[in-house]
Length: 307
Image 1 (cartoon, rainbow, N blue to C red):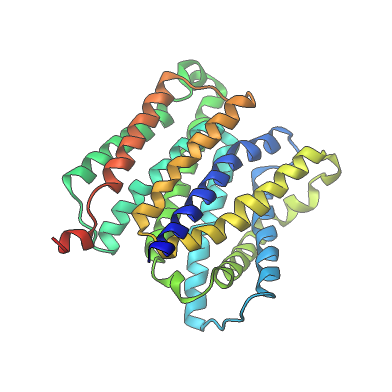
Image 2: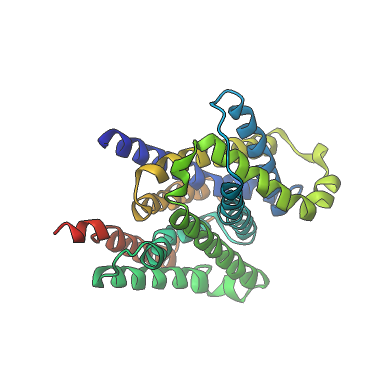
C-alpha cells in the first residue's frame, strides 16, 4: 500500500514538473509565428495517439466493452480536448508564469466537485481555502499584467488567455473526480490510446486546413525540438504518469501537485526573458498556495468517519 502511494506521489511530481516546463517551451514555439495553438494541440493529440498505439503493441491486450468506450469518449473530451485546447490557446494569449500559476487552482475545483459527486465534506478550513485561492486567481487574471499592460491592446487578450487556462483546470478537475474509479479497470496504455484516438477524431475536422497550410519548412531545429518535448514528455509521458497517480491517490492529493508547475515555469520563463514577477503575482501565488494547503490538509470523508 505504501509502495503504491509512493509510486503515485513520484508520478504526479514528475508529470507536473514536465507540465510546468511545457508552458515556456510552447510559448517559445508560438513566438516563432509558424505554429499556432490549434496546430500545437493537434500535434500533441496525434503524436500521443501514435505513441500509445505503439506502446500497446508491447503491452497485454485488453478488451474494452462498448459501454466503457462511451465513458472513454466522455473522458477524452474533459481530459484532453477541452483541457489541452483551452490550455494551449490560453498560453498563446497569456504568459507562461500567469498560466502556470492559474493551474494551481485545480485542487480547489477538484475539492468542490469531490464534495458534490463523492460526498467529501466541506469544512470551514476548506471554505477559507477556496476563498483564498479564488482571490489569488482573480487578482492574477484582472491585475497580474499591471495597469500599463491592462490598458494596452493586448491586455484584454491576456485576460481571455488567463480565463481559458482556468477553464482548462476546471475541465481536468472534472475528469479527475468523475473518472477516479473508472481508470482502475484498465491499464494506463489502454485508457490513453483510446482517449487520444477519440480526441484526434474530434479535433481533425477543425484543424485539417490549418495543418495543411502550415509552412513546416520554416521551422528551425529548436522549434522542432520544443514541439517534440511537448508531444513526448508534456503529453505522452505525463498522461501515463497521471493515470498511475490517479489510481494511487485521492483526487485532492493528486491535484495538490499542480502547484509544482508555477515554480518550474516561472524559473524557466524568467531565465529565458519571457516574463517577470511583480507584487501582484507574488501575492497571487501566496494566496493560491495558501488556499491549496488549507484544502488538501483538511480531513477527508474516510478520515472523519474513522474518528
